[in-house]
Length: 455
Image (cartoon, rainbow, N blue to C red; front, side):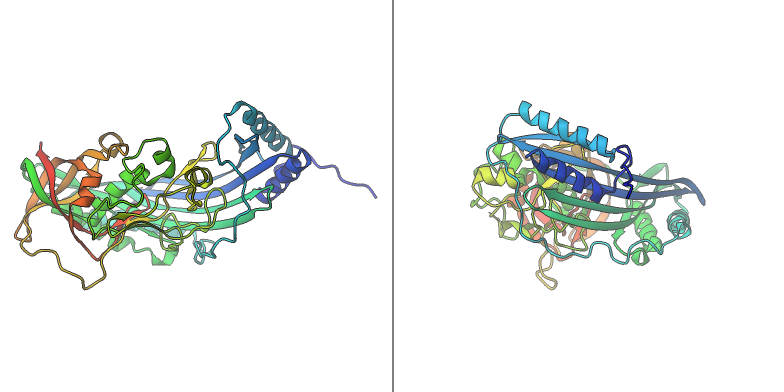
């Protein structure tokens, strides 16, 4: 019988690449972890009733980590031929010899991960025409919802189907899939020489649950509310922080809860686990098992099973996020927060669905006599927020409020403070959770005072 020779340049599947690499590593007596990922994306944009962009893309590859003498050696490749995979293994092995050993480094055969449905009914039955129609509907409704709409410069439909798997020579082997479908739109409105833009977005795992009409109408309503803005006052004021703005702030300061940041002395929370760091009404949770959460996952980038993690309970700092290495060095168990920032990036620590827990519906209502500033949103976090110190100074939008009633919108102003001081100063927490596209969520909160500076 004649055996067919395998072509070393032929592309393998992700599963085939993983099997090949693990077999090769075992033959060489190497400790190896393989992270493999394939992602298919669709993006559709529309403007003035026409499709301005339609893009389909697929990316896949494998990331390798070889452990030799307590040191990690890393490499990655998007070429899944046997020849390329062998070269990637060689590079990872060589890199391990050049890397400083890391205390606590180990490959682990983790317990089983929870079963999560992150794909819904999938996108296989959704046609290209339906996706295009969603983008066109966003543009049409937003453009026609208010005569003051002069343009809809940003918006469209996007989806992603991500398959990933983690395996190691210690016996670990698991895989998962997650689907997302998203619509977002940002209309620009103008009146009396003043122009304002705001928007809305929707995420779901079921295409049929998308409601482009509602998303567009909410976006126009938000932008319209900002028209007629007047200069903001300057000084320290009580602030009603919208759930959206609070979630944005939480996303900016999520790194301070990273075990990696703590061990490097780059977090103000270093050495403070077990201390009260916030007001009694503040509870912060990271829950990767929340199936409706954008960043849900059954296991992390090292294969560690996901589970809800309460970081702050009633103001008390109970825990921080860890991957396997940071946990070992801290003398605790991994919390399942290993994260890769691209195939070529190192394994770090990152949040999943991170949120400030809302109060139960029917709880205490906000003070009807509230007077101060309502903070709608913040921007400029790349330069104006420091997770090492907790300090922030950010451009913001919002409203002047008197006795619980909005008086008028405010021109762009600056809001400044310290995130931990803000958490200490929380006087009331709302019942409705609002999410950002960063995977962070929060309800409305009231704080005693923040620094406001008008332009």
